[in-house]
Amino acid sequence: MSDKVRRVDYYYVVVPDKPGEGARITARLKESGVNLLSLTAFPIEGGKSQIDFVPESPDAFVKAAKAAGLSLSPKKQALFIQGSDRAGAMGEIFKKLADAKVNVHSTNAACASGGGFGCILWVKPQDFAAAAKALGA
Image 1 (cartoon, rainbow, N blue to C red):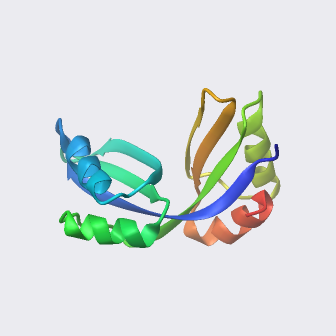
Image 2 (cartoon, rainbow, N blue to C red; image 1 turned 135 degrees about the vertical axis):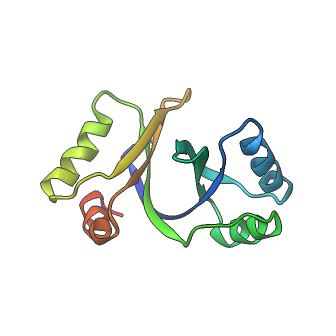
């Protein structure tokens, strides 16, 4: 199976870096029936954490997030990649981007028990169109 690359919208929230914040937010999203393609959380300065959400349905996510009282970032774009797990999968992706002279700003990838892998990949906004083209999105 060839890799499936798609353009996705994502949003982030900044929350206190303390136990339970992720549980509180994801419970509210679950109650609203929101499905996420990807979630990435990491600490930032000032005792805060940033949580990036890639929703399957951006409109439903925004509605649910607002109902939950979350202060969302403006809509941003990333690339979401799924494929068969194999040695060098990420290297192939990085090579295509390097050949297109696109720098990867950040990425997070993981394999799944069914033999697949998934990756969320961020590039600077001015490089997004070139990255999407290089990866066939």
